[in-house]
Length: 90
Image 1: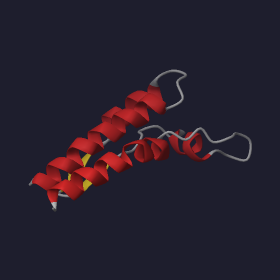
Image 2 (image 1 turned 90 degrees about the vertical axis):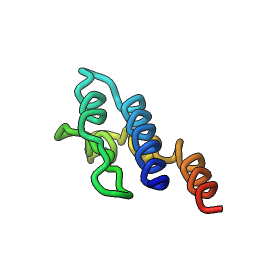
Image 3 (image 1 turned 45 degrees about the vertical axis):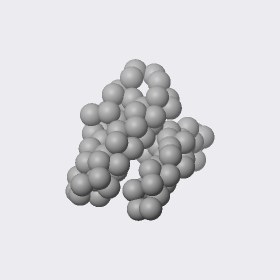
Image 4 (image 1 turned 120 degrees about the vertical axis):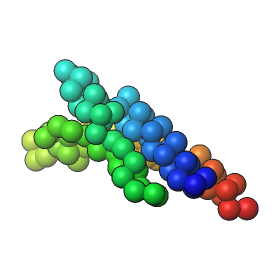
């Protein structure tokens, strides 16, 4: 239960960070990240966007440079997440 709580806590934090980092035009991408991300299993938190173009923003296209927001959000919280798990399993 404690490990699940850590996954949920950091999943929420990372999805919030991804929303903050998402390119802002209409706000649809940012809002969809917060609405679509959720705990889907005991140890799995899915962070996703709910718009068709989110993947193109993250990875870019042949005509548009990438504007990543999910991977940088994960990286921003990675050390704290790993530290929390390390403390749990001492």
